[in-house]
Amino acid sequence: MQRRDLHRVSRLVVKVGTGTLTDGAGRFDRENCERLAAELAAAARSRKLVLVTSGAITFGAAKLGLVRGAGKPWDIVTRQALAATGQPDLVAAWERALAPHGLKVAQVLLTADDLASRKRFLNARRTFARLLELGVLPVVNENDTVAVEEIKVGDNDSLGALVAACVEAELLAMLTDVEGLFDRDPREPGARMLDEVPRITAEVERMAGGAGSVHGTGGMVTKLRAARRLAAQGVATALLSGRRPGALAALLAGERVGTFFPPVPERLSGRKGWLASVAKGKGVILVDAGARRALTEQGRSLLPSGVKGVTGQFGVGDPVDIAVEPRRPFARGLAGYGADEVRRIAGVKTAEIEKTLGYKYLDEVVHRNDLVVLDGAE
Image (cartoon, rainbow, N blue to C red):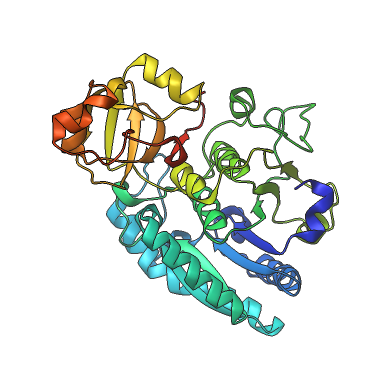
């Protein structure tokens, strides 16, 4: 999908950042929220719309009168408490803003763990589909109250990408406090906004700068990584100002606002897209350099002869990471054998699997149809 085709989008995810919902002092900006609600309602009249919103922790801090000290971030337990306190106010703010436009909202709280399970991912997809059929606008945030590091998405840019993949959206629109992606710090003289980025490379990431604002967790790099994951799945991404009146409508009309990231022509299948961007490996299969070349350059399956070892435990059909070095996976796939079985057949030829185990399921440890090379591994 190209920018000129955006008027055809029938399924859209809009992500609103904390900086868009708050003023310079970090206070809730009711006026901007109400303006955005009107624009969201207009977009929802002719397409299915899901809203991913930040702001629960900021709302909670305001309610409790807490101020974050400079250079002293809140610990995770405090953030969880603030999220629990602020989440009802965040949803209520959207409910009040959208009600005059005839839109009902549903609160959806997710963690990365919810979407890393293929079964729960598909369950979430069905729930979203039914809400949209009923004319309800899902309002999504990360479930910070229960999320710990192992199950956190980490930022709502990534959450927006996960939700876009889950609901099979054609476009993720990120509304933020900047106009788009610039070729350098936009405060520098001569900084130029990029109208379109055909492919997100390491050079593009380097120009993106660092972390987000004091009130948010995302930065430009997280937005680019989300856009890159979605591009591989055939989903377009746009980055535009959440404070520019009419920006969303202009985007959907194909006008040149913000920065547009088109999908790549060779999109991943639904299952491979889930493996690449949502699934978490339950263990790691360690391979030699020859196996890596076969998987990344030749599109081959992983055979036991290329396996050097296994870390962790997994069963048949579980997602597993594939790596030469344990902490640097270059691929992910669905295991054709359990962890203990892979340990036993590591290094043997395919013809020797049955002799080694006493039985054989498949010739491959991970079949190429169930395997995806991860970002930057080619």
